[in-house]
Image (cartoon, rainbow, N blue to C red; front, top):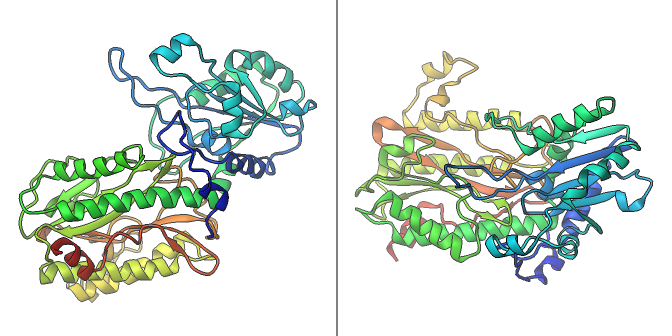
Length: 445
């Protein structure tokens, strides 16, 4: 995709966030895409995430709900977005409710967005204070027939915490029980899966930051270094480039630790002759990167490590070629499984009898490659998207095959972030070495 030239000229620092100002046209266009899917006389309401407590008077760092951010750019707590395209009063067709700032908040926390700044960020003309939400809704609900509310319907959702959207939904349905309630999330899964040019540039920006960090660590890695020292090198490069820290708990796994898929202790020593698997990403402007590489601690692959590494790399290259418009994710994963089966046969890890007698629900290759190859990426690391739909231009995916051999202390995964294009894909993380020769040259130059 061509970069958005408008964004290229808008390197203006956002005084409220680390990242540069995002053109409000992105959020305006996202709202336009969303409301096209609404039924007549529909109102849609989105809430910010809560600030989550820790202990005593402590709280976790605020992370915005990605749906309200996608539609408004509002990146602060206690914000509410109301969309009502058929409202009688044109001022009520888009309203962003914000927490009213004051001198006390400004002194202790830093000032929040005022109304003019809310418009500048979101492109929404009607900015109101949160204290006016209830009385405004009473007016709007009298005109509406359908109400679209937000829920978390991600396939991997596994938490039990009640969200601000959950509480709001209960309150609204108790107060207005006779309206017809609808789900916003299927629409959000559809529109968030297609990245607009400004989003692609933001994702390339975060990928470039991640590439800087990987290349920094490539030079730092040596026998005797601790995994947490490598973690610190990533974080240093992220923060100095305006990223907002790790986008997930980093996996820095030396030797057999790499065979634990979600190893996050990062407290072991990197020994001479081992490989280190790095699965690390960062946030920039709420967009995530997610990259994996495997580097030799001493700067040279052994012959066996090279065999396994190149097997993974061949599968990854072939898999990247299959991430094209019109293909379907479930079928794609089956085809990748066939590629991996051939490689494992060549490596002597499975034999033809294993394949002949395999369980179709858990094929033979799953013994050494037990996870999926690709997932959506964007505002979330495991971003929302329709797994039953065919791939389209603008979809963004990871591509991350791997082979894990605990008995040999070898775990290798190679992962890139790509955006599907019309003629060819954009590999946003291609600046991170992944050919054996490139890695060894970078580590020994």
